[in-house]
Image 1 (cartoon, one colour):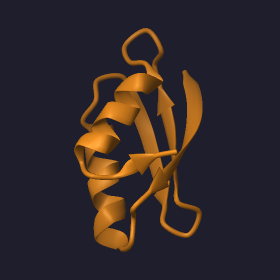
Image 2 (tube, rainbow, N blue to C red):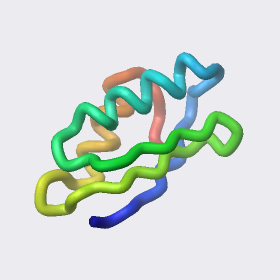
Image 3 (tube, rainbow, N blue to C red):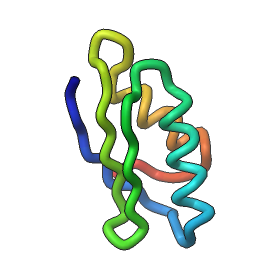
Image 4 (cartoon, helix red, strand yellow):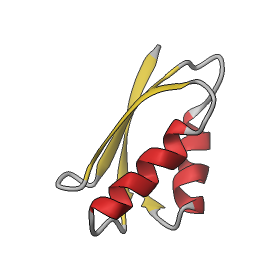
Length: 68
């Protein structure tokens, strides 16, 4: 397992946190997601043989947020 931290722009409330969490958890190979509104970031633990960080970016941007 590997872990990465993504800086996310555009989150303004706990509903945004929930949206980002859901789209990341839906990706195959993602084991754990922790999204922080205070730090504007998501920490993702994942299996690199099943998913790559570029998929995280696409999922987050598809949900209407920015990855910085």
